[in-house]
Image (cartoon, rainbow, N blue to C red; front, side, top):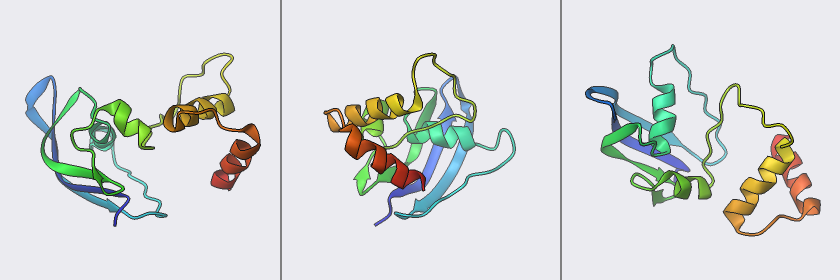
Length: 130
């Protein structure tokens, strides 16, 4: 079973229903695989990420998105994030007083519903980063 499966996804811009951006995209990502999506400006990379996250700026007109065996095509962004899918930016805005470690702990708390033990959390993060 694929970790992420995108089948024939078609997306239009919310503000311009005539402009189809994704035109039947298919993608399969298996657990443990690393994929890089590259292309020139305007090729649909950000649209794909926003489509996966159900951004209101983009409307899915066809196709399905499945994550870990569950159809997330019509899920809201917050529910998708709670399943463990996140989007980052190349140059994220720095928030004074908020360390990356504190941010990651807040995310983990939001997903699990309980604050992680620092003694378990740090080794878990270090293992992922290695």
